[in-house]
Image (cartoon, rainbow, N blue to C red; front, side):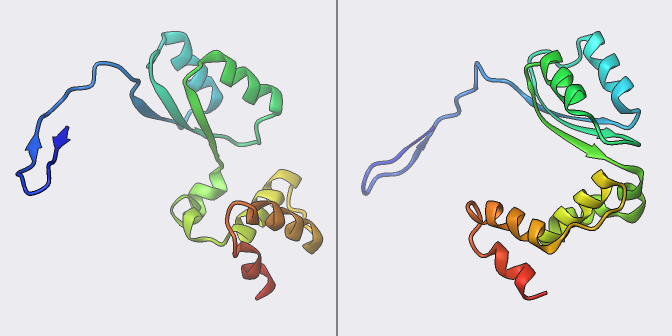
Amino acid sequence: MVDLAPGGAAQVEEVLLTSGRPLVRWQARGGLAEVYRWLDEGRDPQAFIDMEVWLDEAMSLKEIQQLRKSHEGIIHIRPVYPEMAAAGLLEQRSELPVHELFRKFYQRQTGGAQPEDSLVQLFLELVDEDEPGVREEVEER
């Protein structure tokens, strides 16, 4: 805690937290079986969990819901597919434009089909509500 007064010196006091929950990152390279094993073991029962799950196929909505019900602290589930890891897309993900991320997601979910430009535009309109200027990226393409 820092206490400041005009013209005076700053007084710094360390105050340790006595409540709250830690944020942990789970990297389940063994897929959902590994995640469920960790949950059965009671791993990180009081933590918020940011999870990467290595998968061969996309998770169903039912699997996602079941996973979220299994631990109230799960805040993010990020699937990782073999082709993503092999192509180095994990590191590149934040560097790709939003419309390219959407195209890659669509292809993965549909088994390789290309999204129509109108669908990409609709997606970008939805994203544009939170991030103005995103739509221009695809229009320049």
